[in-house]
Image 1 (cartoon, helix red, strand yellow):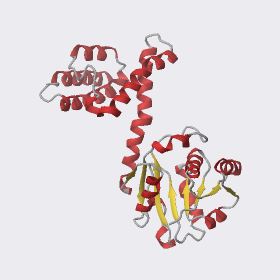
Image 2 (cartoon, helix red, strand yellow; image 1 turned 90 degrees about the vertical axis):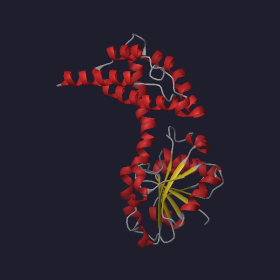
Image 3 (spheres, helix red, strand yellow; image 1 turned 45 degrees about the vertical axis):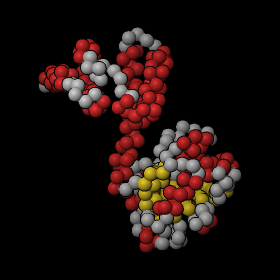
Image 4 (cartoon, helix red, strand yellow; image 1 turned 135 degrees about the horizontal axis):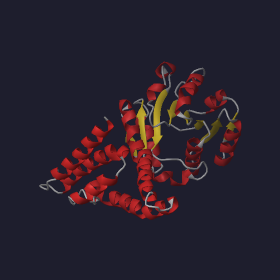
Length: 292
């Protein structure tokens, strides 16, 4: 199938993907958006066309990417269903929603997919430059699933196929290692700020530690990258932490520490971590008593 690609939505994701496709000499038809200024800007940047009417984009494309916020996708689909979609591929780029949002698509002779780039788009006009390193997840109709997979692989991207029923769990994985990690790093920086270190200096001081940890995981995996007081069964250091940690963070500290114990036991079979477990449980129990 020769793809002739159109985009509904001209935000960071739509513009970045469109530019990425265009620099790889793919046939890019153009953009439609409720915000005509954004669609015109996207068309200029990607050397494609601006569509003032959705029906014109539908008529000129056989592959349509919906790159709007998640809560608008269903509305766009409702509009698309008014037109002739026979033999067209309809994709959205949501990480959390599955292709099931394209209700009744089979009765229209079209084929629905979720195609999610596993990355954060920080800038509309530069994020495309790093898309060659990104994994794409795909799920949807069996007919063109392999063709879409090969489409991204020919661009140089790795692809993972997801079961549509697993999309919420899949998205949780992405949020955990991005947004929730950001929150965790913020908490750690606040501890250093409470040591009378400036916020900017705290981030700068901790960044080499953050980066080296990520690089070690990338190079060696979670277990081999493991370091710290829990791995080396340093109970006194754990006690010191528990003596100063804010009550509202105790549950978080315990949960993360118990997972580190599980990893440590895999790295060091035969080493006993029960004393640390008991100390964590004791501190957790005492904090619950305070709350009650």
